[in-house]
Structure formats: structure tokens, C-alpha cells
Length: 356
DNA sequence: TTAGGGTTAG
Image (cartoon, rainbow, N blue to C red; front, top):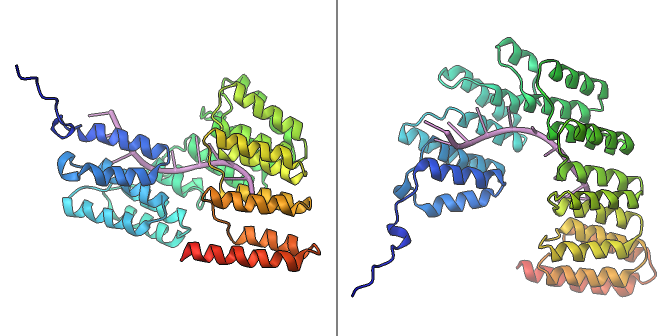
């Protein structure tokens, strides 16, 4: 008797474009933009087909990778296929703004208005709200939402206009637009950077009372705030709290703590955290290594700095200009300068060999 | 019934 053949993956029914877009959209939301592009290329457009959504997700991914050239070439496909770009213009405006190309963003915005068939909406204005004002948006009868207000609050906080931030906060609530965790994160982070960690803690409590759970960003900002004041035990307490709440821990969380310990010359604790994050599968970046090398140099432990220097290379993390600068400065400050400079030359030579 | 805008380090 013949056994029924198993269907080959290529013979199975292909997903619909909508289903494919949903998957692609989720990958983009996780900020895996390169994966979106390779996924798109691999799936073979001719087999599934693509629509306005697919191409917009693709353009958005190129925008976030600072590859506006590719974004614009995908836009060409719209015209070739006779598709209406619609919201895609907003994506492109955002792409230009991400590259600080404000003139091109404004030009595209004007083209959008003149084109007639793709008028700007709340998302377009939300994208431009950092550079422009809400006045025009209101005059056109387009209501701002929580994202628009969060952008505005972030903008005024950066300018140190605390009163203005409060005014926007009250204004949004009066319009029944309620702040969410990201809005509060802007406030928490600003307070922490201003050294007002207790006030930031108060905002977190108020968050919690209103049924909003703090997230990784909230805890990272708080930890950074305590680290800045040298209150490492409190920073550590926040870290324990976020772990107990099951909040996702990322490279930035560890970076905040490691930075804190290094700045306060607690190198053993900093190194333990480096080991811990590696065990969790989090890959320390060059900035974390530089912080640690700097920490060791500042406490005069050049040998440990040297060891870390080798270790980072063994892990595939190549030292950058800053790493060399940190080590160089430390060598200059010690009487071991001449002896160490030979080592430095050797490292530099090896680095060039790796590049070449 | 799928796409575009807001927050954290160095």
C-alpha cells in the first residue's frame, strides 16, 4: 500500500496578503526592520502578491534603517502598479525627519496638500507636531490624540518648560484624552534627569493607582535617576521590583545599572551584571564595554581593563575610537605610559588587520 | 479588515 505523501511546504495553500501583512506588521512593531525586508524578499512577491499595506510596511522599515533611497524606490512601485500611496506619504515624511531632513519632509508635506487625493490626518500631524504647532491641526478640525500630546509634552520637557508640560497634561485630560504609560514615561524620565527621583517615584505611584502598569522604560528611567544620585541600593531595588513584576529586562536596563556602578567605582558589582546579562542572552554593546573599561581605568586597574579589552574582542565586539581614547587617557595618566603604549600599538594593528 | 506618528543608555 502506498503511503500518502506529505505536502511539501511550497505546495501548501499560500497565506492571503492580509495575513501576510499582519505577520509583517508584527515583525515591524518589534523593530526587526531588517527581518521585515528579508522576509519580504524571501516570500517571493509573485507568489503571494503585495498591496499598499505591504509596501508601506516595507517603506517604513527602510525609513527606520535610514535607507531613504530604498524607501523612495519602493514608492516607485506604487506608481508602476497604479496604487494610491495614501498613508505612505506620512511614513516617508517620518523617514525624512528621522534623518533630520526637515526641508524634504516639509516639501513632501506640501506636495501631499497640493495633491488633493491624500490629505494629511492626525498621524501626519502627529509626525510633524514636534516641528510645528497644534494650531493648524485644530483649525482644520483634526483632533489631537494621546500620541500628539505625548510628543508635545516630550518637546516642552526637553526645553525644560515644566509648566507648559503640566498645561498640556491638564489640557488633554480636560478633553478626555488620557495619558498612557508612554506619556508618564516622558514625565518620569524628565524628573529623573532633573535629579527629582522622589517626585518621579511619586508619578509612578500615581500611575499605578490609575491602573497603568509601569513598563521597562519606566523602570529604566527610575534606575538611571537613582544611579545619577549615587543611590545604588535604591536603583537595585527598582531592578528587583521590575523582575518580580515580570517586566521585560533589556540591554538598556543593564546599561543603566552598570553605568551607575562604574561611576561609583563599584566594579565588582558592574562586572557581575555584565555576566548576568550575558547569561540571559543579552548581548552587551560597545557602550557598555566602554563604560566598564573606563571604570577600571578610573580606579587604576589597568590590568582588568586590558583583560576586558581582550574579552570583548573574543566575543566579537570590536573596540571603537572611544575605547582606545579611554585606555589611552588612562595610560597617559600613569607612569606605565611608555610600556602600555606598545600594547596599544599592537591592539591598533590587530584592529586594522581585522578591518582589512 | 491587514499599513503610517509618541517614551529609556552611551
